[in-house]
Structures are given as C-alpha cells and as structure tokens.
Length: 157
Image (cartoon, rainbow, N blue to C red; front, top):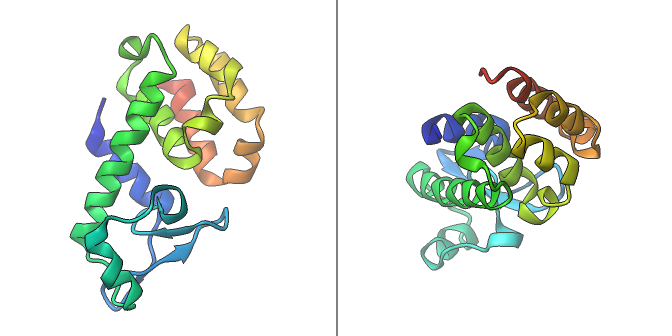
C-alpha cells in the first residue's frame, strides 16, 4: 500500500477549515463536527492535549492535524483490510480506494457493501466498480466517488 498517496488523497478529499493559520472545527457534509482533514470529533473524539486549543477557539496546528490524519488513515486501512480476506493480493491503488472509502464512511457502513467487497476480494474490478456506482454513497459523495470508481476500474491514479 502507498500510505503517502492515501494521505495526500484524503487531504484533497476531506479539505480543512483553516482560519488565521489554524485548523478550526467545522461541520462536514454529513453534518458531523470535524477538525483537520476529516477527523470526526463526534465518532473519534479528540486527544486530551487538543481539547484546550479547540475550546479556546485557537484551533490546532498543521502538525496536530497531520497526527490526527495519520491515526485516522491508519485505522481506515486496518478497517479496509479486515473486510477483505485477500487484502494482500490487491494492488496498492485499489487498497487505497477501499481505505479511502473506509475513512469516508466508516467500517460499519462499508461492511454493508457486501457485493462490492465480494467482487473486490475476488479481484473482479469491473463488478466492484459497478457496485460502487450502484450505491447511495456514489451519488452523495460527488467528485471523490467518481475518482475512486475510476481508480478501482483501472488500477491507476
């Protein structure tokens, strides 16, 4: 897996709310309070050392936002791998696609994509792409889902 490529894609896909040089909390498109690059405060909380800067309105630094992103992306990768018995047989581009999806929707929602996961585990990338496109997630996620579906189909970024 190309973890640096995953981090770069997540930064682009998630965006951030930077005001006066600091990452400030914001509501994501799903209405959840987030900070940095998509760190869901409602689902994952905030480490104790970041509570004061957020409550004071100062926000968090790029370095702190990077630490949150790294931890969240690592968890998303673990979640994705846990859903696919043949994870190690899947190329890194497609591993990043499913890790990005796990980051975006969470393991519990991604685990309901049974036909997608089955096709992907069999490395049937045409069917996996079809299943991605045949979901509410695809229509609700905009450019991100279209790009990820193309990457799933072609195996290229």
